[in-house]
Structure formats: C-alpha cells, structure tokens
Image (cartoon, rainbow over all chains, first blue to last red; front, side, top):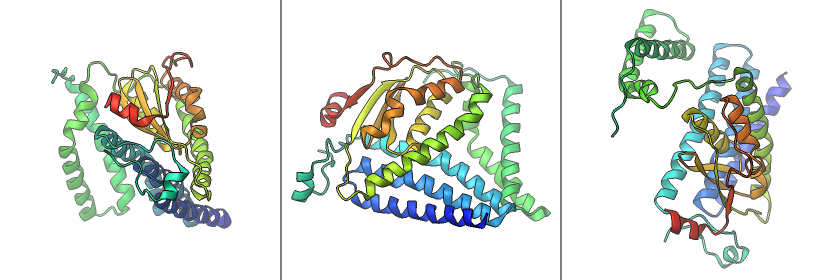
Length: 113
Length: 198
C-alpha cells in the first residue's frame, strides 16, 4: 500500500512538471491553458490521493479527498472563465501550428490584431 | 432584466438549511476541533458566507424555467464520475505525450456543436467534463451551442461521435441528439471564424 502511495505521488509530481513544460513550449494562450490546467488536475488528484493513502484514514486524508473534489469543480470553471473572456475580447487562436513560423521566431502567432 | 418568480417560503428555508448543513459539515471536517472557541469561529464564518452568497442561494430556486435539481438518474449519475475519471486518465497521457514530443505535434481546431439539452445543470456538467478531459476546453456556451477549443482533433473523438454528450444526457434523462443533429463543425480557419462571429 505504501508503494501505491509513493507511485501516485511520483506520477503526480511528474505530471505537474510536464504541465509546467507545456506552458513554456506551447505557442498561444489557448493551447497554453490546456497545459496549465489539464495535467495539473490529474497531477494534483494523484498527488493528493497518494498523500491520503500514505496518511491512512485520518482527518487530514479526508481533507485531501475534499481538496480533490474542490479542484475538480473549480478548475474547469476557472479555465472556462478565462477562455470565454479571451475569445469574447477577440484574442485569436493560432490557426495552424506552422513549423516555419516557429523557426522564423515569431513568438506569439495567436496574439490579437 | 426579467422579473423572477418568487420562490415559496418553505423551499427557501429548505435551501438555506441545506446550505447550512453542508457548510457546517465542511467546517467541522476542515477544523477538526470541537471546543467552543473554534465552533463559534465556524458559526461566524458560516453566517458571513451565507450572507455574502444569499443571492446565489436564492437564484437556485427562482428561475421558473428550471428545476433546481433536474430528473437525475442516480444509477448513471454514480457511474459517470468513474467513466469520466478513466477518460481524464487516458487523455492526460496523450496531452503529456504531445507536450513532451520534440516536434510538438499540435493541430488546434475549434469545434462547434449543439448538445440539445435543456437543463442548465446538464450543460454545466457537460462543459466541465469537456474542460476536465485533456485536449479540449469549453470556450462558450450559448443556449445549447458549444464552442470548444481542441489542441488536436484526435483527442476530441469522444466529442465528435457524441459519446460524451450521450453519457451526460443519460444522467439527466434528456434526449441525446443523433450525430447528424449535432451540426458538428470543425473550424480550422479560426481567424475567419472569429471575425465573422465575434
């Protein structure tokens, strides 16, 4: 059981790390918000689940399970609010990711006009 | 601003009681201390939270076109989170793979489709599920028309064939649209779309 907990914690931190890399690598606001929110959700869920199992059945493990519920509710709502605000204010998504554009060094092809 | 129907007093009291019980349980779970000092802090903060969010609580019951809790099929509702968790699990690794791939093989598109659901709660659940599933996130919901940003079309297969919509419709006992009725559009020329519609 302790190894399950440790595995979950390692998986969680790895996913959080990949999410951070994704925010840096992806080209525009919309694709970045994918990386900023999605692997984060599963990363946090598995991290908290791992900690809850590691802790056994105590009050703090119940708190960690509640954190999972709140993150699963609040994260998509916040992402939707950001994306809605962006598209309503006319921020253009990158049309197609062009290798030539990235090679030429245009930093933000998705910037609004 | 349309005039909202007043909710009957008994249901308002019931709603407040429901919120009170949920908040009290949460406070006790989070504090874990049951002496008078901590409980009185709890009472103070619960009163404050309920006073600040009273419009939100009442809003739950004053829209005449909506049932507060639509007709939920509990069997489907209990199995839905597990199905969703599996979807999130699988799709997460697909996004992680895209992010870590040296060539960054992304192909962002916008999807637009109708879901045909009436209950607000059903649309909220569908929108949240889309956002939680990696690779897709809900940009706009207008009536029953969804605008979804998708990092790669292969990650949106569950949306394009309507299986996620059917799952949510099952939970709320709503009529799911057929694939032909969804008017699924895959918008690649996003600049033109944004100019035309926004």
